[in-house]
Image (tube, rainbow, N blue to C red; front, side, top):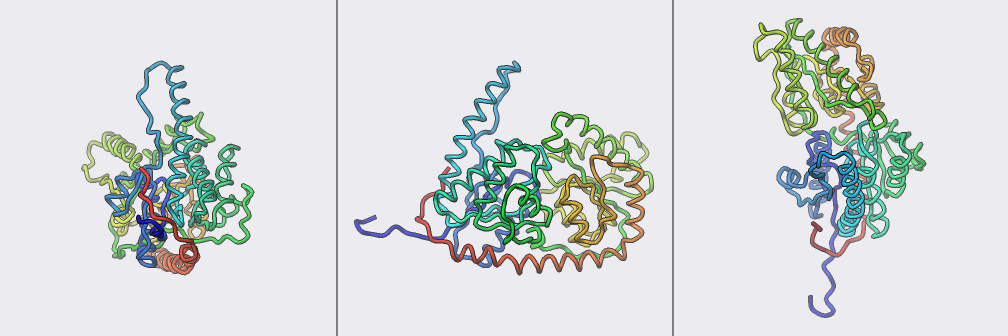
Length: 420
């Protein structure tokens, strides 16, 4: 640059979160918001700080850098030594990630957390993982004048005080907050966030296109399988929780195929795949007379592929939030075997609260009766579900203008190479 020449300045938007790491719902949220940005802000450069940067770059065509420095390491086999090395690695990771996140954030006019259950504690997440990353992002945004938007996020009030402090502080520092349901907004308020001006925005996945449903009976029920070990507060009993869940779902699978119906196993995250394969093999091994295609499992990678699998099923029974949501969006009669308030809120929004079950106290007899009732009502429910999904999609499109306003009003930043 010659003397006196002004640096090139432009607006740059960065997307931030556990993206590209195998969770189809998270990546679906990214896909939906990215499509909106390309449509409404085509001249604004977009990049990403993601848990799986290679996947993000290859699948969505935007530059991406790694969210976390710490990828774990080999174990020595000596318990005390391994604990010490883990503590050292985590401590170093906190400092290194804070610096890397700050370097990334200062390059952007706007940083966006696109949907997801980012502020929830329904799964096992340590304070120094996602909560710390979000806190570092929010502090960096405040320090460098970057506008931070958390868009249609899920939230819950975590029992762990440190996690609550980190998530609450990150939410308070955001320039824009919107939540995907009233329960999430209430949870943020419980964490000390003033949510009086915050809106409830339908989940970003509602912006995704859905394949047409034929309406013809297929004789196939979709059953979602999850690698379920309880929430962070249940970590001590995680093994027993997993054993109980798998035994109940395997029993249910057996009952469905014994009734003469076929099953398509469904997953919502790469970590669910081994669980689905184990359950399929176990049920078929107990019933050697069944054809191999009595239980079908074809893993997918995106919500679009998932919806193509479920759209013509007679019913879906699922646990992953976006497995439930996308089945409902496709007009498929759906049972939620949920693990948080978000499932109950979603089913209530679609008028099918009576088909909600709790994963921690799953009763197979009750679930079987619920499936029978759902199948009996399927023809009536499907048009209702499609109409409600269309309403939510339109509400999402209408209310995303608040994010557009934030991008339009954000100040330009000096162009710099994306940090690696």
